[in-house]
Length: 473
Image (cartoon, rainbow, N blue to C red):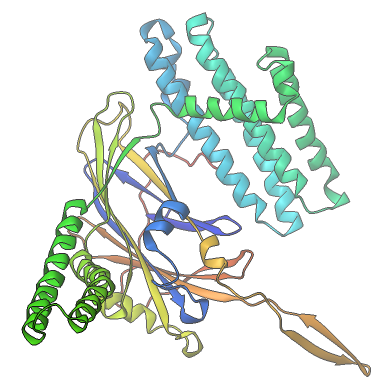
């Protein structure tokens, strides 16, 4: 697997995923090249609003295989473990199980080929069956332990059923794969009957979609405890911004005071002309004060991170990582030389003027205090492109064709292409790069493809897997 993975998440969102090990120092920068014709620039899109509304991240402990301690022999002997340890490793298994199924089902939902869809659906349903059996094989008998197991079992059963039903509701129609459809439906019915037999949910909860949904959200939060890292985010530069405001105000007042003294020297006594002149001076002060402050702040803030983030283990409260985050529009002259070289590789018709939105994240991972048995954390960050889409034009054009003397037309959609360049810097190693082309229209992402890099530019390499097979199908 590549050190950094980029793929489509929903119809109008993309996600990058990467893993970091104990002691790692990693800087990752993403440069979105937005064509001028899209109309997305510093005047139309506020970077901070976009960060808070459209960028969502999740950081958690990670293992590349589902061979977690819960299903290993040494944890089957429950008498040697505390309730807290059992719950923690139970959550690790359940959380990674849910994430794997969620990831695979989202990828499968984007498959349009009928044969590939049903073959993958069959594989996914078989994996779900196997993993649920594997999970339930270690059901504890002690009531103190069983309560936690039942919460996780209830959620996983319901979640897998929901993901499969959602896939079936949007599945391409074909009578050739009725056997696969029947197998998946039977699995969903089996899981529903299983939960009924265990009395996991009351009849009132089952009959109310809002109640069952909210209950499962609560169970999801419970299995995330101890796995998903606690985030403490702090805005940087608050004091510096106040100082900038003070300097800008002092500069404006210096100019205003000079003009007032000069005006008093010109006009003798309190006259209407003096009053009018002072009003004009104070009016210009209010106009230019904000502009001067903003211009000064942009100069001071340039290149500085916007936020700092501390990641903590939710159980021990130990610090696992420190991060700094950037988001800003930058000019092409501020790009690294390698990125300029990458962009020269584009075809001439794609060399359009663009505004550049930069997102950067610098991570320092602690060299200790990880959960026992784990040496890796995974970061997933989702970028919603919906705020971009609202600026795009709808397709209005038509293409005409003639056949046998008859003229017909086809409506065409307006598409836009965003170039995305990644820069990865690990420790003192030379930077590595990757380039993607994101084709989108007003309603969806049409395609994401990786482009070749020019000679002499090092591509982002592969992550060495030391822990086994991936849990996803």
